[in-house]
Image (cartoon, rainbow, N blue to C red; front, side, top):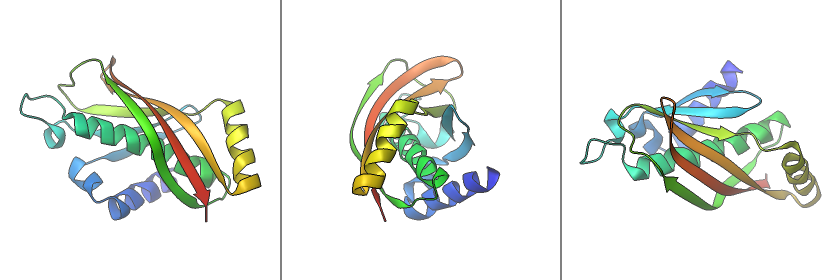
Length: 149
């Protein structure tokens, strides 16, 4: 799994250069969630809290990365794009933070996989959040589309 984390880190840095400025770190992936970490120092706004654009970007990338892992688990490759998303900012973020994207339920995964294999593309709605320590600071829902290569 460590090889895949490094592969994703390299991919994000190469294909989405702003991730290097964020100092985004691909931290963890397991059967429950994917976690990306970012330091406040590179993502701070004029008020000394995390910039909303950085929070939104990290959440969007967490969802994108989850889809990347789901395809990789099936030895598939494809183009992944976000179709739409919603962020709710619930609490200011005043220190280093993490975005957690949760693995979708098995019935959602089954439908996604069925669409991929039948039509070469599938949609998946993902839920994520930013945690500052134990505080739920931002909630996110995003719909992603994957088109097989």
